[in-house]
Length: 504
Image (cartoon, rainbow, N blue to C red):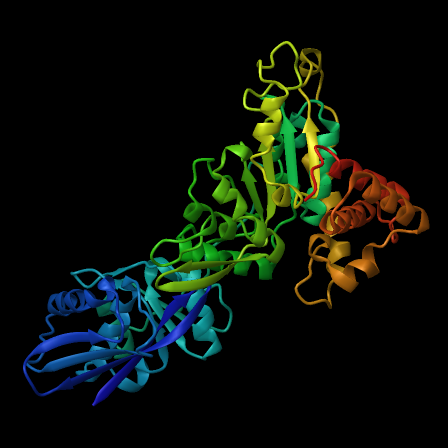
């Protein structure tokens, strides 16, 4: 008799169903796991044997063979322990075989039979729901998996609890979803003294998810401005929260199964490696740019990042997804983020201050900013100079709009865009618009077209730069509630584009 249980193998943010087949046959006693398992899966036989021994279940003196089908799909992770144990228990007639075939299981076994939480419960629940199966998982992963509608989640503390559930001795109640959390302790824009132009650029960038570069001397407030972006962004929609949480589930970042409606804000250090930014490792796991999906990736000291790391951003910025290729895995992750970069004008940081600039000025500035290649610089929709704030301004009372007021305008502009792109595939905000759709929604009036043409000719804008000015102008018009794009919108959009212009 061959007993069957089901689990999943992860491919990016998706989970692929794996059938766990177990046969107990006459022959020399042994316990083998086949079907392209990695080291952690192969070791499952020892954990399963010890867990069953702790439950006073002795394995028969027969040949036990576990096959993970499809056999050509790599199997990685300790979450195969529980489905292997269930298939074995069904083959030994300890639990009903037909009950096990109706579930998808994942979980790591301790030697005493308790279940340890594992990564990826949320995407596993999505796959179980699509196939009409019940998900059985450790109690630590139940609140996370229960967020998937249409999937009953049984979260158990131990393998004994699972056995009692399937034999009807002590049924386990379905798990409840974790808490929904929002943004807490958001920093307010009014804390920033002066820098009105930079604040305006932040508002525009947040409204249309445009990439932003802040250039300024040390201490001018670049990092302070960037830290206040989460406070002006609208909360994640239900679909966005679920998609983002699936990525965070694979990375083990969901806190006690709760799902956050706050948009991610990732700020890697400038010493981060390429794998730490784009993802990688043996299992091709997601990292910073994917963890920032639907949120913000803030890269302070931008030119200090290794050149190879910066260049890897070019394609994900354009496509909104990244292919992590390793010897044993090729995995695609979504990464539609808003890039916010901050940089000093030169190595010493005081290029614009004759009294403090180094002796190599202005060559040091060209060399330092030159670390950002032309094609990458071309992908920033807005480039803003952040001048130092005068000492006298620091003693003035807070002025300007608060983050709450700016967030209301950003939310209204994003709602306009959501309505505009409701029936357009793969387009949600103005930053996504391209081709005929961009021409239809962002082409300026006659005066605006003439102005944009003169700017493009005078400053040698690339085709990409030309279209990015159109997108930013459309966002500015949305913030004003204007149906059309006028020359004033084009002028403001172009003014942000031309700071440190170096098209390629």
